[in-house]
Image 1: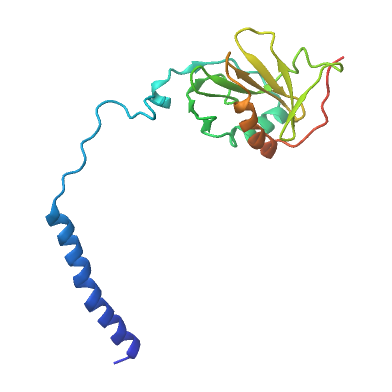
Image 2: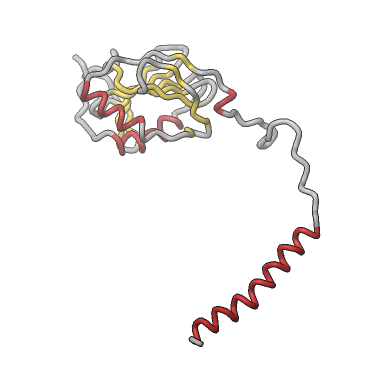
Length: 186
């Protein structure tokens, strides 16, 4: 008999009874599983929001030309399922170029028009290589618009939410959309 075959048979003959003994021992011990906690799981006393618990958002979306549609398709495929600790949520829109996270929602819209306040005299904030025009004139949201990509990408933050979601979005945005020299209005 071949020495390798003999070694394989010997290893099997020794290992198989040990594995069977362990399986029997574990099953005989018969510990009862820990009881399931009542109600939803909490983290530090806070019940996390689940996407299925959030209502579907009905959102408007811009009409896009073919070039913008190609850019927005690339971006949407690169977005995270969770943003700054908030889960993504269902969105109803005429196009697939709107995405949202959390409650109150952070909403990203790809392919918006150039922001009215984005003029030659306006300043931009650069985060991780992406330039953003920030509009704080709406009391219902702070609107950040990426102004140095082939399409304008808007992120609406609800009141009281800091720039963490925008910062987190700069990486997928920069990966999906190449830099383009900003073109502010007159």
